[in-house]
Amino acid sequence: MTSDPHTAVEPGKDPATDETVHCWSLDDFEALEFDPFLHDRLKEKRAARIQLPFGQGSAWLMSRYSDVKAATTDPRFSREELVGRSVTASSPHAIASQKASLNYADPPRLNNMRRVVARAFTGKAMNRLRPTVQQTLDGLLDAMERHGSPADLVEHLHGPLPLAAVADLLGMPQEMRRDMTSWANVAMTPGPAPAQSVDALKTVRETIVALLDMRRKKHGDDLAGVLTAAAAAGEITDDEAVSLATAILVSGAHAVRNNSANMVYALLTHPQHLERLRAERHLIPQAVDELLRFIPHRSGVGLPRIAMRDVEIAGVTIKAGEAVYSSYLAANRDPEVFPDPDTLDFDRGPIAHMAFGNGPHHCVGSMLARMESELMLATLLDRYPRLALAVPPEQVEWQTGGLIRGPKSLPVSW
Image (cartoon, rainbow, N blue to C red; front, side, top):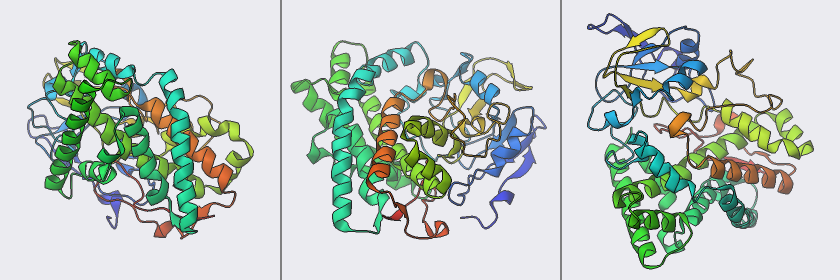
């Protein structure tokens, strides 16, 4: 970790535009510390120009809630235009396939893919999956208790449960799931080891190809079955089916692993909030939403969009062809939308946070992620009235160099 992350950003000048360019190095921060660079951007009334560690050139960054909302819903900004371009980026390579990915699609093609995937993410489908997730959760905690206190919650719960849930959704047999969590983690940590990240993505993709081949021969109503049926009907291509399943598996196994562990860490280091949830269990869904807003769950920003024409937005003119990033983390800390945004507050009520994104690219798996998080918190509260960190908070070890932030291990006692 950096010894002084608050000095990690050094501004320069873009010789072509004379705009100040902030070199955003995406250093790792302690625990759930919010990136001070984003705090600084929220104080400004206009978009900022940034340069990230990989790729070429610079890009615009939207930080305020209203600007992020506008940029992520404006059809003049395109994800498809990213394909084949080298722009300044958080990762040395694309995590998703550019030619067939949901992430690199614009409407109407994007809408077609989302419509297919949505068939497996209905409220009815989540209700069917819920008892299976709960059964897996109970079994994992039974095994943790046999191990004995203290134990690592990441190893015993946050790692295996999200993989099991998304694999169940896909209809993936047990024999295909071996090492899938570790492959997803390596794939989503490209900075320190780009070659290993590429290899891990290749392994996951090969597993998905085998799963979909199997589903073509034996149909089912799981997500793999939905995707193969849609491909057979010509609604999506075979490559799109593979890309969709791969993205859902990797993000479901990795992002929920870290986000759910972050939530438990946040509660264990906010004892008054933890005790309130013990006394008021009906607040759990509301608490999960506030935790999603509050926790800085990723490093930097995700994928940008490319301006199709000149656009006036956030106090600047973005020229056709320029890249535009939107920080959902910053939007979730905008004081104009969330009073006292750096405070964890379960009394905010219904909140329109952007932890799952915004607009046409809003996360398709948000219902599953919420369900898993709610079940984990409720079950931990029910089973362990004395749940606590087994080490001082400053001794919890955190992952470094990843796109998604989270603890490497979470030792607890009960």
